[in-house]
Amino acid sequence: MELLKLATEWAKAEVFSTRFFLYFALAFFSASIGFWQMGKTDLAKAYIIPTAVAGLLLLIIGVGLFYNNKMRITQFAKAHTADATTFYQSEIERTEATLKEYTGVFRVIPIMIIAAALLILFLNTPTWRAIGITSITFLIILLLVDGTAHARIENYHKELKSINQ
Image 1 (cartoon, one colour):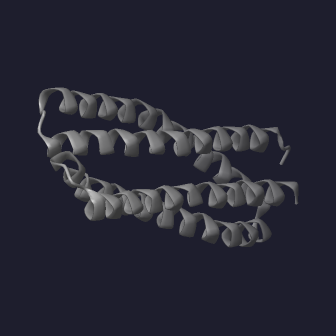
Image 2 (cartoon, helix red, strand yellow):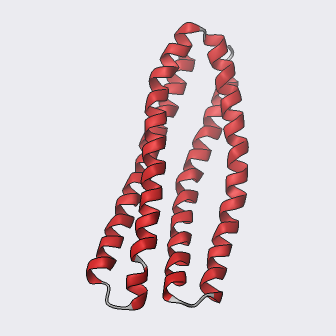
């Protein structure tokens, strides 16, 4: 039962964390509407589409993760009831695979941030500057939320390994 409680607590924390993608999506949509309504300069007008796209991407990520983790909570109970040993082994394998994926994410996103910064430096038009700045902001949000998710799954993995099944 300790295993089920641990898995459920982790999934509930993930559900809570994914809400931040939705909050940031609302912030980007609000910024886009603000630039559309009040933007007077070319640079302000250039932010309308990039911030809307970033908001849409964050909304898609947030809704997808929220739904998957919400469903996972009920699936955990069923899988644990069916066969606790198999559930334990599948969770160990899943967390190990997820931790490996995060290694790639934490290498690729900083490279993308550097590319967006170079975009700002070398393409000095309002549209490209807005795309670069919005991209950097979007990617930093991904790093912040994924950083906490990585720490959470790393801790969950350690706690799983400490359980004697």
